[in-house]
Image (cartoon, rainbow, N blue to C red; front, side, top):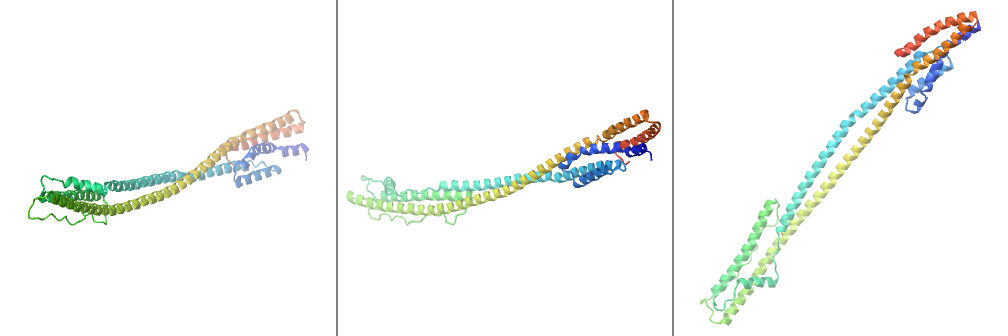
Length: 363
């Protein structure tokens, strides 16, 4: 067989393989950019075609490009499907956190109001001064010394006035505490009742006036002493009652304070857990978006390089055409005939292969 014919036949599709080889070299970086195994397998298949060039197999090259592009598109679609729920999930989680924070604040405000009510009630509790000098001052000011009007009735009236004043004062304080307890919705186990101390027995004598100053002063001193003891006992009983109330309400307040702290801690733990989940969702979304952006960038680069396939084919087609034209113009007559024949085949092959790449279809 004519050696020129053999050479022309062998070289008929050489331009295709050169174009394919140059095209594939541009895909080498993608092997380190996350291309799937199936795309790498196609690269190996096309590489094997170069080692055994019996036919151009441009259709397989186009199929590779289409399959690789489809796989990248599906990969992006998959990322979009994975990312899509995160926006709703993050919004929902943020809403739950905001709601839980509002709930915690309402709960904390409620406890604060209740604790404040206890504090305001406790401020109303004021113990009486039971110091002897203080009580003597009250007794002496009320049960007056009247040496020019020495009458038992006057002493009895002053003693009675003192008892009424003390009972009214203590009774008013107790009534106020009852009203405050009701207003602040504080339930008391200890009854708020005025302590009872038997009244001071009055001076009883047939003659109201004291004839002797000494007798008057002894009676006055005795009644003042009885009044001092009576006021002291009343104050002590009153203070004992208020101390019981004070201890009871303080214990209730401390219990509320503990409940408030426990509630605050519980809400803090719940909110921390919710916020940790939110951070996880945000991190996962950010990682998926980063992968998505990288995949988009890779696909854009892939399109950019893939669009150059036709250019590689045209480049090497023109080079081979130039080579055949040289044989047609300057070769021997038989070589010129074969060159003309293969130029015709080159035109047909070029139209068939290059146009099919342009259409993105099979050869």
